[in-house]
Image: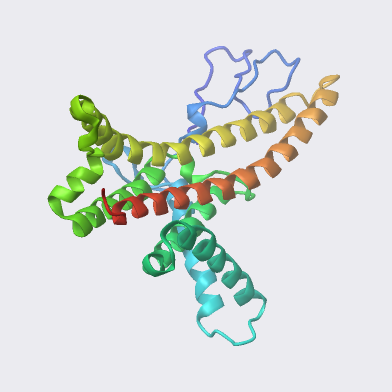
Length: 278
């Protein structure tokens, strides 16, 4: 995080200093956009060539996901051990509960590895929020959900053209239906922008916004617990700390849910690309 500026008045306690408590004459150090900015661990931010905390967490998360499945399936057994059993349960849940349910077994089997990889990668990126020391969801930085959504977008568009050709893809994107009559041009224009611009945008923003908001709430109650830890405020600090525990448990649910929603929408896009247009 960026270091706070030094106050010109030495008697003034800065609101965002870590030793700031209620009744000490300083304001509440509310979280904000500065809570999502990190100094480079390597390189220079001005040169746009650097490596910071979120990049490190994304790299470690990728290694963890790959390492987990490698360890579980590198030497599979007929009678699976605990690690293989957990990996198989997670893999089978996404394969049957998401891919097969959306695309069917015949069409969906080839997309299972992609969807499983997306789910566990997104879930791991979300989980960093509640892991000590890390304590930051990578997906709360819009660039990461945007890149993942872009991968899905490219796959969706390319599959649409491959399956239907140029004319068929155009009809697919615009929702062409000649029975609409005079309103057809307006309907096609709305569908075109909705499908090709709005849908990929909302795909990324849905994940980002939920993780951003969740992390902000966790920060809010965590900082409040420390800020109120002074005098009579200790009683309120206890209540705030209980909220930290409650919000952490709630975040565990939201983190898995958002990963699930992301891959469910991915399969919905693929299903739309493969569906025959009537």
